Length: 254
Ligand SMILES: [Cu+2]
Image (cartoon, rainbow, N blue to C red; front, side, top):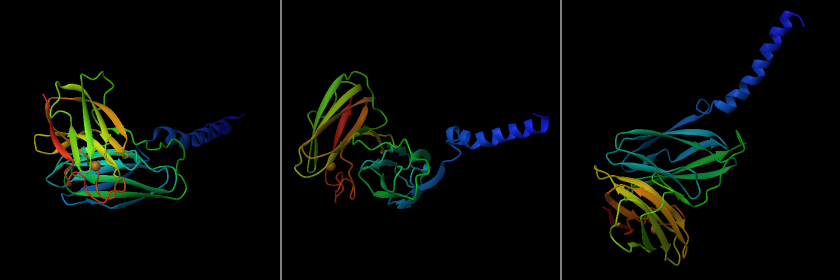
């Protein structure tokens, strides 16, 4: 082989390898940024159009005076994200690899809520490693440490009733929740009260069908908490806001 063809050969090898390298390692570069703006009465936009399998980066800007949360609901794999008043936070989301609608709840616990629909259309941009929602736990303080205390909580229409109003200790605390309702899906969210009066959603036992139970262990610092069901209209087939209906109760971690 003479020299010019060697150079051409090397060039072709690089040209062929480049898109592959981008697909493997350029995760940040090929994410499309989608801005979500939170005001105290609603979040916008209400609909996000995307391609099946598309990689998105939500840039969530809270222009309100209250802390907001965003999280995936009804099987959408998006962890809770707390956005304090006046701040912007980013979170990555990969659209499921087939056509359909994923729901994201943008809300103030006990306040306004918007369900944002991510509408996936067309062929998968990158079919493959999507995961199905499992209705399991999610949250920021989930731990696999051995719990130091266990709190049993009864959920009904529309009450949250822990067996005790306080834990015995701070640290890893296991919550078990039973949904005693005959008809409604409920969940248990452990909300930590922040100095500004907002909430951090430390973890949830999500989407408990009537008559079912679940558990979660959370590593909790001392402080004031609220045990709540934060299902909003349009989530899990509900027509009402469960927190507003009374599904919240104060709880203390000493
Ligand atoms: Cu509920």
